[in-house]
Length: 358
Image 1: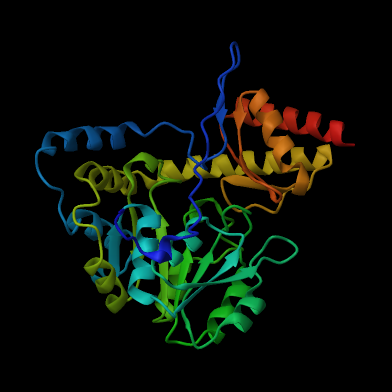
Image 2 (image 1 turned 60 degrees about the vertical axis):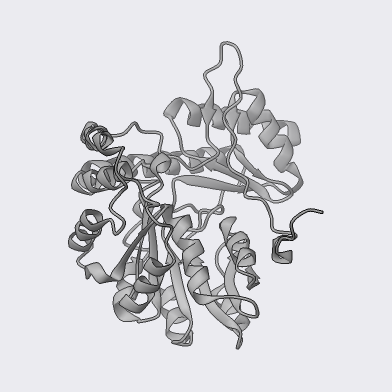
């Protein structure tokens, strides 16, 4: 007889990571499927990580004290309001753990980040998924209408993964003003550094305004530390303290903490890279429109093409040309902004695919 496992695990969707680029002889492969920052780590960040290797025989600082202090100073928030975790997705799971269990609701837009339904079901909570609007944006009015007595947590992915769209200031102002104060609202800003800051609001402004707002950020994207798994949440002390209670002991390595601190110190240089990526994104958007396709209005380091039943054929053609993209069967394709050569090849493939469909 096999061990009995929790029935809650039945039917949990598997997380699907972006696949590596297919290898073809004579063709340079490009991975445009995982929203990674294609730039190499800065020398100063590599140096900090290498120096941290000398302490491999020691456990990491459980409280990530130096990193928390650096974040507090950098964002001008109390250290007691910061929780560090194994990427923003690790903190996401902790946020569900501290707010929702069986009989409780976790409300989010859909389609959105794939981990949302997974961590909700793991906790035994009920997913309250609200469809995106016709432009693949959060339908905040519909989300307000979906709030009920069971709702304990609301997730707003801004910009939204995988559709690349973002909620503007006026919409988020109106939404948060109407959410009941006993429901925690998490603004998931994994791609914050790529947005038009004149149009897309900073979640930290809402954290300062509302006691029930928390902000998720990560060092994986703009800072280029995806392999080290380090993120942080800024929330008022009761929420941040609860997150620390359920954190995985020693989950954030000494190397990750050192590299994150060095990245904050070099942020100006890293943000210049984000500006370059955003410009390349705009060029790719226009290139796709010139072909006749209709990418969503992106505020991230990736693009979204709603292709419906053409999704699989588009992804397959990309694969034949040494490109990996992230297909969502029957819905669309997410395309990371990568190296210029890969971006140019993607536009060529998109043109070929569109010509065959026309």
